Length: 492
Ligand SMILES: *[C@@H]1O[C@H](CO)[C@@H](O)[C@H](O)[C@H]1NC(C)=O
Ligand SMILES: *[C@@H]1O[C@H](CO)[C@@H](O)[C@H](O)[C@H]1NC(C)=O
Ligand SMILES: *[C@@H]1O[C@H](CO)[C@@H](O)[C@H](O)[C@H]1NC(C)=O
Ligand SMILES: *[C@@H]1O[C@H](CO)[C@@H](O)[C@H](O)[C@H]1NC(C)=O
Picture 1 (spheres, rainbow, N blue to C red):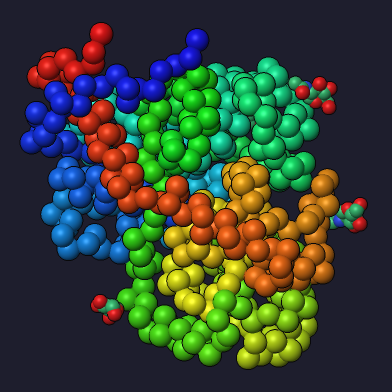
Picture 2: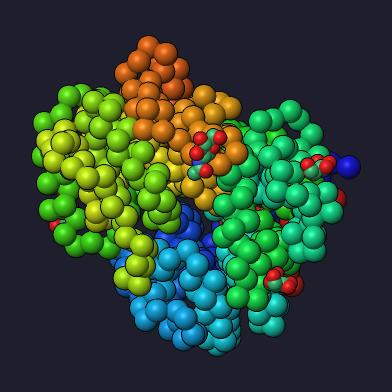
């Protein structure tokens, strides 16, 4: 049986008739900026339609966010909850980027302890719906206590979620995929032919990163229970771009799955009040470079490459002879003792031609500059969307989590070129980095990547379609909240 598209069965005219009915929606992302930012973009879209949004996170995370745009300030409220103290979590560490990878489990432990202040907040919030993230698998039980409904909002893409499989397999043990190599081929519930699967080294890094479970609950259990217990699943993505993946999700979840669109960045500024000065300096340097020649290198707010990978990337950029702007996070928080180093003499040798930037950088503005001709990226979806927004062709180098699956999707459509790597251990050489960036930025052989990123833009990021997704999501929420007050809106 095929689970129907829920949007086909909603009587929109009945809902439009009650268009004045405004909802109060609570949004509660996981403590990672890679999650907080796409949640904030969704909050803005919801508020633009006149609904009230309470955006809940910890005190320090909220303080690091930009203020809501003035026209939405009355509709978006930031709610700060103090993060409970747990052993082994450094002081002031409230987001994943503040701690080394092996400490993230203690952040999850503290996050789980947030359910008490969160519950206290909900009690007096009068909210209709709660949007929550994969780590907060306990939200539905709180919500039901207060008569609220829940949306599991996945910032992970439909192909990644489909690859992860049915919720029950994540909650118990996957009966089909018992070995890491089983994750290197598409699973049986994907009914069409596809190259989308992990490489061996990617799945091994994931196994390594989730095997420490001092938080008491594994990531797969969290994700599975989040899907299982919500009223509705909303996924970052568009049905026009990938209808087949949305259908897989409906079939394996057997509940409504709605797209929220790609939610392109509206210019998040990292909360940095010196943003304009920072940008002025960077722009001055970019202005001096040749048009479409600069390689922009950045791996998002989470990924920290290994030292040997940093060496190959650096030497590869040097060998490419192209100008480059590399945003490099050398550590994850003040407690991270493994500070990344650049190869001996690298910065002197590339002086003038390349910049290594160790702070926050205005990525969207950099990608929009005419000098930038390629983006060496980790394939994090927010970065991918920003590359498409600016028609910047992609070179892909994955590090963790969903990045491998994202990269396969982009490779399949020839939107991004993967740096060639050893299939088993993932190692790559400076020569392969140099060849890859030259291919995508200048060589004739890489024209297809430069053309395709332009071609896919409308399918990815049509504003009208983006508005339609949000409208449909809100209609759906309205049709299902306050069931006693509302009229029946589902056709039989
Ligand atoms: C999982 O991997 C093992 C070892 O390679 C193999 O024997 C088994 O058939 C695989 N299972 C599936 C469902 O592919
Ligand atoms: C956590 O790890 C231990 C030891 O590896 C294991 O016995 C336990 O089942 C795991 N717990 C969860 C919830 O995954
Ligand atoms: C930064 O520049 C933009 C556009 O030039 C301007 O609207 C904004 O007010 C400036 N922000 C600050 C903090 O100076
Ligand atoms: C990865 O495998 C390649 C090819 O077998 C080998 O040359 C290289 O030393 C390995 N790298 C690591 C880090 O194990």
